[in-house]
Length: 255
Image (cartoon, rainbow, N blue to C red; front, top):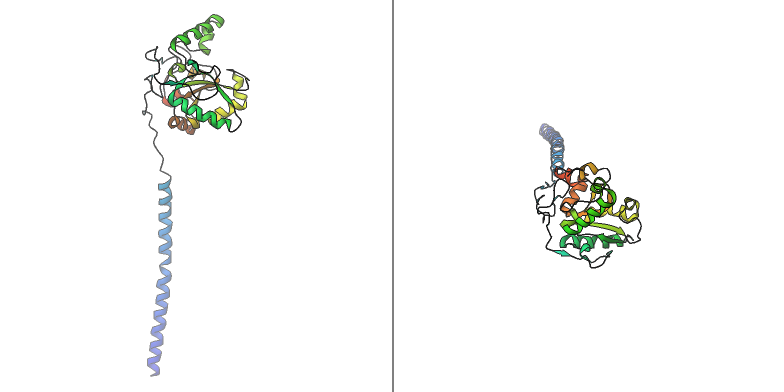
Protein backbone atom coordinates (compact mmCIF):
# COMPACT_ATOMS: atom_id res chain seq x y z
CA UNK A 1 0.00 0.00 0.00
CA UNK A 2 2.80 2.38 0.94
CA UNK A 3 4.55 1.57 -2.34
CA UNK A 4 1.37 2.40 -4.31
CA UNK A 5 1.04 5.76 -2.54
CA UNK A 6 4.68 6.52 -3.25
CA UNK A 7 4.25 5.76 -6.97
CA UNK A 8 1.15 7.96 -7.19
CA UNK A 9 3.02 10.79 -5.50
CA UNK A 10 5.94 10.54 -7.90
CA UNK A 11 3.62 10.54 -10.91
CA UNK A 12 1.82 13.64 -9.58
CA UNK A 13 5.12 15.46 -9.13
CA UNK A 14 6.25 14.57 -12.66
CA UNK A 15 2.97 15.78 -14.14
CA UNK A 16 3.18 19.05 -12.21
CA UNK A 17 6.73 19.70 -13.34
CA UNK A 18 5.82 18.87 -16.93
CA UNK A 19 2.81 21.24 -16.89
CA UNK A 20 4.91 24.03 -15.36
CA UNK A 21 7.67 23.59 -17.98
CA UNK A 22 5.27 23.52 -20.93
CA UNK A 23 3.40 26.59 -19.71
CA UNK A 24 6.53 28.68 -19.37
CA UNK A 25 8.19 27.45 -22.53
CA UNK A 26 5.30 28.90 -24.64
CA UNK A 27 5.61 32.47 -23.33
CA UNK A 28 8.65 33.48 -25.42
CA UNK A 29 6.86 32.24 -28.55
CA UNK A 30 3.91 34.56 -27.89
CA UNK A 31 6.17 37.51 -27.14
CA UNK A 32 8.27 36.84 -30.22
CA UNK A 33 5.18 36.83 -32.41
CA UNK A 34 4.04 40.19 -31.00
CA UNK A 35 7.48 41.66 -31.57
CA UNK A 36 7.65 40.60 -35.20
CA UNK A 37 4.13 41.69 -36.19
CA UNK A 38 4.13 45.12 -34.54
CA UNK A 39 6.74 46.79 -36.84
CA UNK A 40 4.85 45.44 -39.85
CA UNK A 41 1.65 47.18 -38.73
CA UNK A 42 3.45 50.46 -38.07
CA UNK A 43 5.20 50.36 -41.44
CA UNK A 44 1.90 49.92 -43.29
CA UNK A 45 0.29 52.98 -41.63
CA UNK A 46 3.10 55.33 -42.76
CA UNK A 47 2.61 54.50 -46.46
CA UNK A 48 -0.93 55.90 -46.80
CA UNK A 49 -0.06 59.09 -48.74
CA UNK A 50 -2.05 60.43 -51.70
CA UNK A 51 -0.41 60.95 -55.11
CA UNK A 52 -0.78 64.49 -56.46
CA UNK A 53 -2.03 64.64 -60.06
CA UNK A 54 -0.16 67.38 -61.94
CA UNK A 55 -2.22 66.78 -65.07
CA UNK A 56 -5.57 67.37 -63.38
CA UNK A 57 -6.00 70.72 -65.17
CA UNK A 58 -4.45 72.26 -68.27
CA UNK A 59 -1.52 74.66 -67.94
CA UNK A 60 -2.20 76.28 -71.31
CA UNK A 61 -5.97 76.59 -71.77
CA UNK A 62 -7.03 80.16 -70.82
CA UNK A 63 -10.11 78.90 -68.96
CA UNK A 64 -8.08 76.52 -66.76
CA UNK A 65 -7.64 77.23 -63.08
CA UNK A 66 -3.97 76.26 -63.49
CA UNK A 67 -3.19 78.19 -66.66
CA UNK A 68 0.34 79.59 -66.43
CA UNK A 69 0.68 83.10 -67.81
CA UNK A 70 4.11 84.71 -67.86
CA UNK A 71 6.51 86.38 -70.31
CA UNK A 72 7.16 83.06 -72.03
CA UNK A 73 3.55 81.93 -72.05
CA UNK A 74 0.91 84.45 -73.20
CA UNK A 75 -2.79 83.77 -73.17
CA UNK A 76 -4.09 81.99 -76.26
CA UNK A 77 -5.80 83.93 -77.69
CA UNK A 78 -4.23 87.09 -76.30
CA UNK A 79 -7.62 88.82 -76.38
CA UNK A 80 -9.28 86.12 -74.23
CA UNK A 81 -12.24 87.23 -72.05
CA UNK A 82 -13.56 85.02 -69.20
CA UNK A 83 -17.27 84.20 -69.41
CA UNK A 84 -18.19 84.06 -65.71
CA UNK A 85 -16.86 87.28 -64.17
CA UNK A 86 -18.72 88.38 -61.04
CA UNK A 87 -18.31 90.99 -58.33
CA UNK A 88 -17.15 89.45 -55.04
CA UNK A 89 -19.12 90.55 -51.99
CA UNK A 90 -16.16 92.26 -50.32
CA UNK A 91 -14.89 95.81 -49.86
CA UNK A 92 -13.72 97.21 -53.19
CA UNK A 93 -11.54 100.18 -54.08
CA UNK A 94 -13.89 101.22 -56.89
CA UNK A 95 -17.16 99.42 -56.10
CA UNK A 96 -19.10 97.83 -58.93
CA UNK A 97 -16.58 98.32 -61.73
CA UNK A 98 -15.37 95.65 -64.12
CA UNK A 99 -11.86 95.85 -62.66
CA UNK A 100 -13.21 94.56 -59.33
CA UNK A 101 -14.57 91.35 -60.88
CA UNK A 102 -13.20 87.81 -60.64
CA UNK A 103 -14.21 84.49 -62.05
CA UNK A 104 -16.94 82.97 -59.92
CA UNK A 105 -14.87 80.32 -58.13
CA UNK A 106 -12.19 82.87 -57.25
CA UNK A 107 -14.79 85.38 -56.05
CA UNK A 108 -16.37 82.84 -53.68
CA UNK A 109 -12.96 81.86 -52.28
CA UNK A 110 -12.00 85.53 -51.85
CA UNK A 111 -15.15 86.19 -49.84
CA UNK A 112 -14.28 83.33 -47.49
CA UNK A 113 -10.69 84.54 -47.12
CA UNK A 114 -11.68 88.15 -46.40
CA UNK A 115 -14.26 86.98 -43.84
CA UNK A 116 -11.67 84.83 -42.06
CA UNK A 117 -9.22 87.73 -42.03
CA UNK A 118 -11.84 90.11 -40.61
CA UNK A 119 -12.41 87.77 -37.65
CA UNK A 120 -8.76 88.40 -36.76
CA UNK A 121 -9.07 92.18 -37.23
CA UNK A 122 -7.36 92.02 -40.63
CA UNK A 123 -9.40 94.29 -42.88
CA UNK A 124 -8.76 93.96 -46.59
CA UNK A 125 -10.08 95.39 -49.86
CA UNK A 126 -9.78 94.59 -53.54
CA UNK A 127 -7.48 97.04 -55.27
CA UNK A 128 -7.94 95.56 -58.73
CA UNK A 129 -8.84 92.18 -60.17
CA UNK A 130 -9.84 91.60 -63.80
CA UNK A 131 -8.11 93.61 -66.50
CA UNK A 132 -9.09 93.17 -70.11
CA UNK A 133 -6.67 93.27 -73.02
CA UNK A 134 -7.35 96.95 -73.82
CA UNK A 135 -7.12 98.02 -70.19
CA UNK A 136 -3.78 96.22 -69.80
CA UNK A 137 -2.46 97.85 -72.98
CA UNK A 138 -3.27 101.30 -71.60
CA UNK A 139 -1.68 100.46 -68.26
CA UNK A 140 1.48 99.00 -69.79
CA UNK A 141 1.93 101.88 -72.23
CA UNK A 142 1.68 104.28 -69.31
CA UNK A 143 4.55 102.53 -67.55
CA UNK A 144 6.61 102.66 -70.74
CA UNK A 145 5.96 106.39 -71.16
CA UNK A 146 6.96 107.15 -67.57
CA UNK A 147 9.85 104.74 -67.00
CA UNK A 148 10.92 103.27 -70.32
CA UNK A 149 10.28 99.82 -71.72
CA UNK A 150 13.02 98.00 -69.79
CA UNK A 151 11.71 99.14 -66.40
CA UNK A 152 8.08 98.75 -67.48
CA UNK A 153 8.67 95.08 -68.26
CA UNK A 154 9.72 94.42 -64.65
CA UNK A 155 6.61 96.04 -63.18
CA UNK A 156 3.76 95.54 -65.64
CA UNK A 157 2.75 92.81 -68.06
CA UNK A 158 2.29 93.42 -71.73
CA UNK A 159 -1.30 92.99 -72.98
CA UNK A 160 -2.07 89.31 -73.45
CA UNK A 161 0.61 88.33 -70.90
CA UNK A 162 -1.18 89.40 -67.71
CA UNK A 163 -2.63 87.05 -65.10
CA UNK A 164 -5.26 89.70 -64.38
CA UNK A 165 -6.76 88.99 -67.80
CA UNK A 166 -7.55 85.40 -66.73
CA UNK A 167 -9.94 86.54 -64.02
CA UNK A 168 -8.00 84.44 -61.50
CA UNK A 169 -5.73 87.20 -60.13
CA UNK A 170 -6.38 89.94 -57.58
CA UNK A 171 -4.39 92.78 -56.04
CA UNK A 172 -5.24 93.26 -52.37
CA UNK A 173 -4.83 96.28 -50.11
CA UNK A 174 -5.23 97.09 -46.44
CA UNK A 175 -8.35 99.11 -45.65
CA UNK A 176 -6.10 101.38 -43.60
CA UNK A 177 -4.66 102.69 -46.86
CA UNK A 178 -1.08 101.92 -45.85
CA UNK A 179 1.41 100.76 -48.50
CA UNK A 180 -1.05 100.51 -51.41
CA UNK A 181 0.50 98.33 -54.15
CA UNK A 182 3.93 98.76 -52.55
CA UNK A 183 6.44 96.21 -51.30
CA UNK A 184 6.10 97.50 -47.74
CA UNK A 185 2.62 95.90 -47.76
CA UNK A 186 4.40 92.63 -47.04
CA UNK A 187 5.51 93.99 -43.66
CA UNK A 188 2.02 95.08 -42.60
CA UNK A 189 -0.19 92.77 -40.50
CA UNK A 190 -2.44 92.46 -43.57
CA UNK A 191 0.42 91.39 -45.83
CA UNK A 192 1.79 88.95 -43.28
CA UNK A 193 -1.64 87.41 -42.70
CA UNK A 194 -2.17 86.89 -46.42
CA UNK A 195 1.29 85.39 -46.92
CA UNK A 196 0.63 82.90 -44.11
CA UNK A 197 -3.00 82.03 -44.79
CA UNK A 198 -3.90 82.60 -48.45
CA UNK A 199 -3.08 79.00 -49.41
CA UNK A 200 -5.88 77.75 -47.14
CA UNK A 201 -8.38 79.40 -49.48
CA UNK A 202 -6.76 78.42 -52.77
CA UNK A 203 -4.68 81.57 -53.35
CA UNK A 204 -0.97 81.83 -54.12
CA UNK A 205 1.39 84.76 -53.53
CA UNK A 206 2.29 84.72 -57.20
CA UNK A 207 5.39 86.94 -57.26
CA UNK A 208 7.39 86.11 -54.11
CA UNK A 209 10.56 87.84 -53.02
CA UNK A 210 13.76 86.61 -54.65
CA UNK A 211 12.01 84.83 -57.54
CA UNK A 212 12.14 87.54 -60.22
CA UNK A 213 14.36 85.45 -62.51
CA UNK A 214 11.70 82.74 -62.46
CA UNK A 215 8.41 84.66 -62.47
CA UNK A 216 9.70 87.64 -64.46
CA UNK A 217 8.44 90.20 -61.97
CA UNK A 218 9.66 91.97 -58.87
CA UNK A 219 8.30 91.04 -55.44
CA UNK A 220 4.58 91.88 -55.25
CA UNK A 221 3.19 91.00 -51.80
CA UNK A 222 -0.23 92.32 -52.84
CA UNK A 223 -0.73 90.11 -55.93
CA UNK A 224 -2.52 86.82 -55.38
CA UNK A 225 -3.52 84.19 -57.90
CA UNK A 226 -6.38 81.75 -57.38
CA UNK A 227 -5.31 78.17 -58.15
CA UNK A 228 -7.69 76.18 -55.92
CA UNK A 229 -6.90 74.45 -52.63
CA UNK A 230 -5.88 71.17 -54.29
CA UNK A 231 -2.79 72.87 -55.71
CA UNK A 232 -2.24 75.64 -53.15
CA UNK A 233 -2.06 73.20 -50.24
CA UNK A 234 0.29 70.88 -52.11
CA UNK A 235 2.62 73.77 -52.96
CA UNK A 236 2.54 74.88 -49.34
CA UNK A 237 3.26 71.34 -48.12
CA UNK A 238 6.23 70.94 -50.45
CA UNK A 239 7.53 74.48 -49.87
CA UNK A 240 7.31 75.36 -53.57
CA UNK A 241 6.78 79.09 -54.11
CA UNK A 242 6.12 79.44 -57.83
CA UNK A 243 3.99 77.66 -60.41
CA UNK A 244 6.95 77.60 -62.78
CA UNK A 245 9.02 75.57 -60.31
CA UNK A 246 6.18 73.26 -59.30
CA UNK A 247 5.26 72.33 -62.87
CA UNK A 248 8.77 72.76 -64.34
CA UNK A 249 7.55 75.38 -66.81
CA UNK A 250 9.78 78.04 -68.36
CA UNK A 251 9.60 81.62 -67.12
CA UNK A 252 12.07 84.45 -66.77
CA UNK A 253 12.39 88.16 -67.40
CA UNK A 254 12.51 88.09 -71.22
CA UNK A 255 9.63 87.96 -73.68
